[in-house]
Length: 262
Ligand code: 13P
Image (cartoon, rainbow, N blue to C red; front, side, top):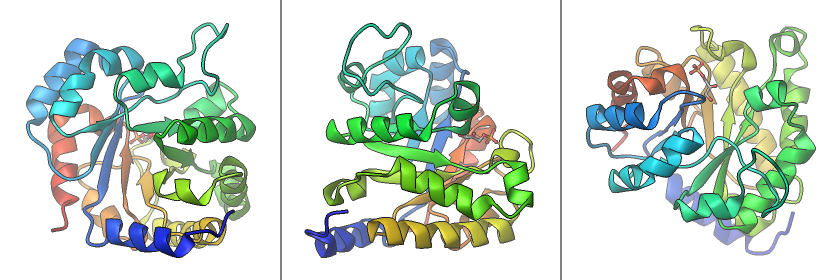
């Protein structure tokens, strides 16, 4: 890690996040046709605060202008680190740049487990995206066995160390982390506030050790309109990454409302 300008970056990062509203990010996964996405935005109405949506590629491409018009930050759920070439079925960073995306999701546990995405590939993706001027939201998380056996700290630290390897100081403000315990994703039961507080405290310490900075740290895993206020008030939680509840405009709106701070 370069030390150059570190003080300045820390000051900027602190200033950027003082009194900040929580970040509310929706991962639409393989849901939402273009038509459904448009209906969602119409029902959602105007938003303020830092709201992000990660739609599937087709909806992303067609509705990019609609997201932009509404001040919603948008980006893909996955991408390839190579610029172009014979990689059937893949999408490159220049293609994503053309759509005016700002933040890219990377390393989601569903990509790690269903598509065998490795930390080495995730590290390459992060480096490529940062080089192109994007910001990234890196997802990390442990499975139930790792939680129960007490291995979760090691697992999470290793993910961060490997995925963020080679991160240069000037790119630190472009990184956000989503902690998503795999056992809480899509189950309807989030981690408890005690677990979230303990884990976020640990992750903030690891991130500070690795980057010298207070990196925004979101929680994901069965966040909904009922538990968002409690989870959002846990120290160390800077926002949410939401799956199921981000598909329902009325639920997503409620989460945005409880995330406002000023
Ligand atoms: P759920 O909110 O449906 O549990 O999904 C969380 C998630 O995986 C977001 O990336």
